[in-house]
Image (cartoon, rainbow, N blue to C red):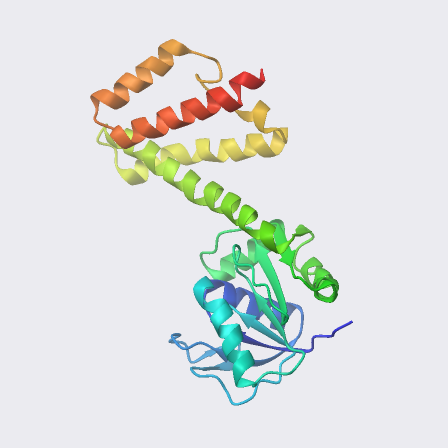
Length: 267
C-alpha cells in the first residue's frame, strides 16, 4: 500500500487552509511547501508561502485547492514540468469535478459550506465526505485518512460526483434564497431586514430539527398546502399579487406545484 509521509498544498483558499491544517496538525504529515500565487499572507502554519512553483517537489501528496477550472490544468502543468515524484498523489477537493486520468488522482469532498477555516474545522467532523478515485489502491490509502477526520463518508464513482454536488448546492443556495424571499415579504411591513431575519431564523432551524428528528421527509412537512387549506393558499397568492411580490409569487407557485405532486399525491 502506498504510504504518505509528506505533502504540499497549492492554493490557499478556505478549503486549502482547512486541509493543510488537517494534514499537518491532525494527521501529522510533513508539510513541504505552501504555494499560492495570489495570497497576501507571508506564511501559514509556520511555513513560508511561495508565489511560484519550485524546481522540485518531493512530497508524496499534493493537495490542489485552486478554483475548479484550474485543478486539471495545474495537475497537467506539474506533470509536464516533471517536478513531482513519479508516484506522487494529486488530491483535489472539488465537489463536481471528475478527472479521468492515468495519474494518481483522488478527490475528497466535504458536503458543507465554508466560511472561515477556524470555525469550519470545528464543524467538519459532523458533515459527510465523499471519496473518489479510479484507483482502488488510493481508496485503500485514503479511507483510514478520512476516518480520522469524520466517520461520515461515502465512496462514490467519478460520474456520480455531480449528483452529490448538485444536491449540496440546491440545499445550500436555494434554502438561503428562500430565506431571502421570506424576508422580503416581512420587509413590506417596514420591518428591517435584520429584524425579519431574526424572526425567521428560529423557524428555519425548526425545519432541520424536524427533519433530523423524524428521519422522514414526508412526515416533516407542515403548513396550509399539505393540509389542503385552499382558503389560506388563496389569501397568500392574493397578498403576493397585491403587493407586487412577483418573484415571491413565482416561488410560491413553484413550491405549491412541487408539494402537490410530491407530497399530497403520496397520501
